[in-house]
Length: 287
Image 1 (tube, one colour):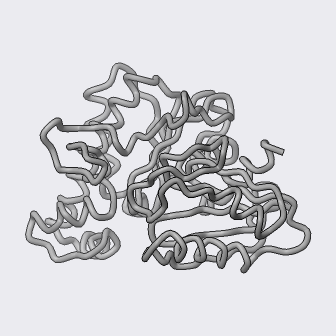
Image 2 (cartoon, helix red, strand yellow):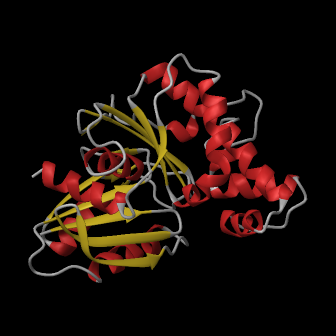
Image 3 (spheres, helix red, strand yellow):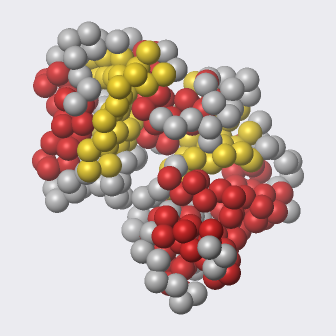
């Protein structure tokens, strides 16, 4: 039996997997005070679903990371620096552990089981605490020389918003939860999360609807860069923020297609537990 783990900026999800189904899962709030507290949150999530039949654990974690060694190098939204995650987890649970980028895991699951099934080249974005990216070619994650597909840190403006990575104009500063809230505040809205903004949009608040449209435009510019560089067969957009898809998908596609040489489908992710499923796939394949 395989156990998949999806490490996010605010929660850690874990699930026992049977094929493409999650048969038992748990979620633990991430304690981000320091590396030790955060690691304890990961262990707690795993313990909630772990049993004696588990033979391998797959973990998806925000990068950059060294997936070969299972070392988390320096994620922007987590208190982990050069953290030997695989080694630490294997010493506790006494089973094989595989580690990869969380967005790559989610895109892999969508390529194998979900919206990208049957497509040779699947690119994806995950929108949440940050903006992650993944590229899957013929059902295999493409890593490049190590950390390919960090789409969240591609710039849509050389003098744009300052990102905590040190650069400017990263799409993460526009399409992540905090980026959307920042845009909302610039329009005089007091929403503290995309979920609050979504509720306002559902009630017909024109400013809230406008914020999502603006977010879609920013995403579209980034997606155009992905299309022109990689020429994928499909682009899949997932993560918690994608729950507001109805309000930003049109402006996203308009901005992307008006700037790109080809027009591959841009679709919403289909899988509920893509990160958990994808990390489980990683664990299976590295056996």
